[in-house]
Length: 345
Image (cartoon, rainbow, N blue to C red; front, side, top):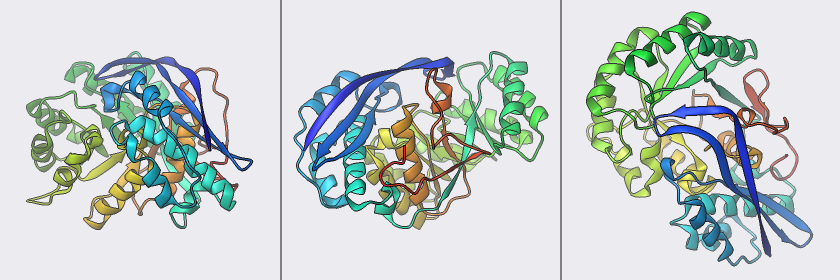
């Protein structure tokens, strides 16, 4: 089995402002594994600020990887053990091997995990230079059929964030779900006061309000505010998973956000989701602002998760310049999973 790496660059149509700073470019690799006349594809686009290894470490890990033919999902897990410390690299290699195995069995990748749901609801990630532009982006997303909107917060002052959120709520009305993502940019005190102050906006949830390293701070915020809290970057360290889900007295978050590129692949993410679901904590999937193959893979994961009421963060490839629509481009706020073997893209 051969592995080929192809360097890729993706440019956002406009910078995405996050608590870690503006995101303008994504750099990474497309992976292609080949054997027995079949191919499998994956992508590895690391993002250190969000919990992965560096691009240099990704490339080194992948170029040092030796692959044998695989005949099961378990065999894939065994082969990728050397990549445990490089989650973006592991995600890319796992995706390529999963598609190769699915092609061999003539099934969609999601079928390797069980009986997938055919339709995956997704949110729209909206951005705007000011409150007026943000409200216009929100109205456009709703007109396209999105019922859940996501906004980044934490890079601006709390007052500016509140003004922007109010403009969006007024623009789309009370029936549209609004979720916010602080990317760990607030202190515990700021998170408490801000989320209490935003209660009247009827937010669906807030992703990662405090530092990923502060599991107990996250737990205290989740217990103290009227807005449901979702664990995101805190999950980048596998040793924290059990602490986040520890129900003494309650889990550190009411929802989990699964980024396969940060968690090391679809299989670890699925394992975490099933464990969390058994403890009453639902999950949803988001990309790491990576490319079309990674988005397709994340959608297959979303289709196989335990039932959850939350839309998934998969309408992200559309934010890049010069990336053509594909079978995973959302329509009416959802993605229909292709029935063809492999990823379907």
